[in-house]
Length: 189
Image (cartoon, rainbow, N blue to C red):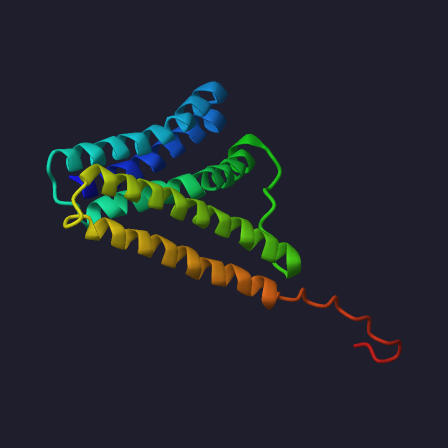
């Protein structure tokens, strides 16, 4: 049940996002589009409640409950950035707005960008850990909560790996390509 609900929430996220952006830019109904976009967090609330009901109903805590917590954490950490990015592209494509500026490609600016993206992963790990710990307390049976606790480790491993990748941009920044040097007089083509 929980895996099906995770899939439904993910599909629902993209359907609401597409409907909200279409209403906003194609149908020229910005309030309706904003209302649809604001419904997206309700999907995570539904998933959270369904997971709690599943556990309260006596379901054995397993990987599906951990995956639900990670999904909610990821959505909290990265959902806003994803919606904002797609909104900028839809505004450009359908609303006549200028092309959105992409992430920096070089140097410290790129390192800062990667650090901000990593903060989303860090927030996701914190949210997932809080939800998983709440589930551990909710189940209140040390013999049954091992799978939930193992997902806490998975969340922090993912945050650590992503943090190392983000840090690599600061330690070894990609240099901008040099401008073409002028050809000395008399040596041109």
